[in-house]
Image (cartoon, rainbow, N blue to C red; front, side, top):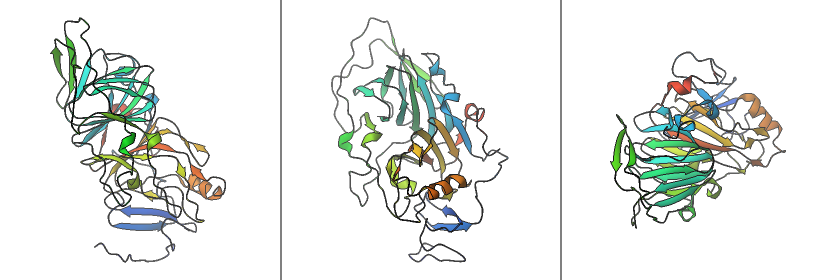
Length: 364
């Protein structure tokens, strides 16, 4: 039962996530850090295990994966993880799509890890650059024209992506919607071809539609359902000086069973004794995917393009050596320079065979 008073048994530090005195801080919490919580203080690193069976962490480098659109203009993105609420894909396109596409099972949210280019959409042209989030409403028709090879992390929800409801900080957190780029409609003239191909991406598909005119023929639009881009440079990071904040503070957008977060550069916690790295946890109600965009953690470079999947119920977190270094170097660093995109899902994710094959095997 939830209570304002939390019980204490045995040896525990006075402050949460601080002053551990050699203990290992392991959080067993419900509802993705927002529900009932037990902080368990251990002698040993709970991530020091070897896993046998399907419920184990997966770590893979994006450049080891082979989406077909990386080598074939007619190809598509690679499915990495899926459940009934979402699909997580990777695209590495360097040639213009010779077709248009339409995701008809749900909204599409794409993060630009690398590259610049243009999307032709029914709402108008949308330029993109590294660090952009691209939002495309369910069943929106679009086409990608990269100026350079573009790596996209793609999250397709079987529901509607929404900005989280405003909390105590107000409507400009986690971001000011005025910073979003919203397109102006520009109809595209026909180029003389006999047909225009539109590929419908859906469960049980694909289906292909053939139009005798360019499908991007929109003269105008109105309403509150539209495509846009938003760059992580404009994201308003919430910080604390005395405690490392839980991941849910950094939510960018959410759909039913799917939460997308930005972990971005910020001032490091400054109160002596505060743990600056995320505590060990097994996030019992959510699977977690971390996509490492870049940066460093207290002088240790983060591998760009690393994709890490932690299934619910299985411990994960920075290894103890990294935690000890963060404590030892407390006075040497005043900022956290990481750039990590995180996806939490309420239902378990199934990794695709293409992701499991190049797994780095850190827990095998």
